[in-house]
Length: 333
Image (spheres, helix red, strand yellow):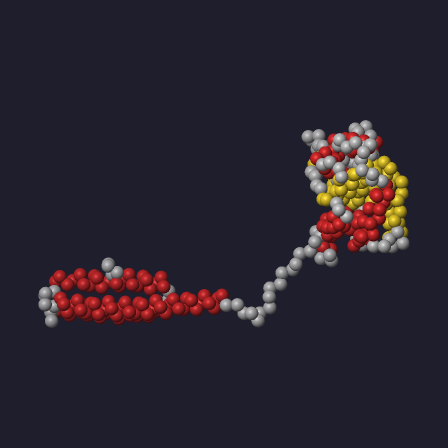
């Protein structure tokens, strides 16, 4: 055996031991792949050692080839075993991380609640839908025509002083009531009409315990042949009894430009009379404005504030509480 062969075999033995130690200590699949390339790749350390075979005696080359192949097979076996072990460890770690302990208490998420104004709207709408009415909506930014003129309130009408209006630079305004929805609906639909119009309204009121510049209103409208004030009273009475229970009701003569005759409705609540809504028979001029013949059709309308109903039902003392976003208040409902 020549000296060159002996040196190469010594290098192979040292390389095998170093590779074995490295494979045993590696702790990731990425690191293992780097070792494979470093030792067994085309430009790996074994290939470099075998690059000296050209200097050997031809008779010694088969022996060195067999020794090198033995090292390759041994290292490849160790690599495969280590790879399988690392893969199993990786799977086990993932299983442990994803394991659910079904005995642990669940994570509690506080449930949301309906705002008292929303729940009051829902309650009122459910009552009127049950009576055969349809929900109608309209824009919050209105024209003077729909908010006033078509509702029998011309520019010089004194009733405009009853509602301090937010006018916009373009001549439009923020609606002061949802009565404008009645006009828009009647323009697009022929009688019979039975609608409720819920929505947000705006007036330049001084904010205090019972007034707000932004509030919510519900309008009621029915138009058909032969409707009378008796039909209005019966509808209002049924609604009041469904929402307030068995309470006394009284109608007081009042004035609204778009109804004639008009009335305010009071209920006896906790020993005193409480005003809850305004109503009346639709003025013939309003019917004419939408193309209805007042000689054929009659109608009645009513309107009320949702805040007022919510304050009564929930015994709330200040309208500003609805808009305070105070969780201590909202969590009571």
